[in-house]
Image (cartoon, rainbow, N blue to C red):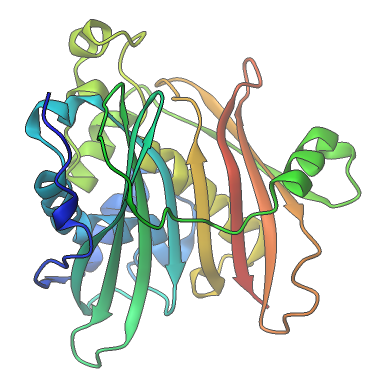
Length: 297
């Protein structure tokens, strides 16, 4: 079994540029059942669409560090997206990625990839992202770099979530349905055609109950829930969203996203921080956890 190539950690890719077409943003919004008007009219790209222009560079890092034999062992563990500027459509983004860390655990190895996307015309940083990839049962052999820390207060988070809607800090919830054809629509809009999402027999062959919803589609649902509930439908107010992908959803499932005020933004005049928890409605199974959003006041 081949080891991870830790010499590639800290080595940035070249930049690639992508024009953010309004029609692509609208298609992504429709593929995630996004009701936000400023996404559906093409003014802004949906926030989680920000993964799409950088995915090629992220994969370039992954393929440089991780031996090909381990690719199908990967689970997308966490995603942290920091919006320095809102993602307006019709701008050209230039993006690069860099391997930040490799962490070996008893159950597998984690690779963190950082990406940065800039406005090609102004060189302003638009979006900073951290992709945490977990390779199940793979021994990467060596640790290197600093694992990404979202800074979430897990004790406070667990206490808030345990209280649920009885918590004095419960803000509200948003429920969403995932259609039977959701994975096919999302694959077309995002370019993610991994067979566990679109091939029932393949998904079963790797131990899944069948096709599962893309994790980023689930995250997109949580993002528009936050924009709807906390930002009065204004995508420009979403400053950050970070989640841990705990369990997969299936087509036909319903998801409820609950939002809690952390009280941690009181001393920060420019933004407020909230906790999120997304659960499957049928059995209350946690789908997204250790999740937070920051919104501009």
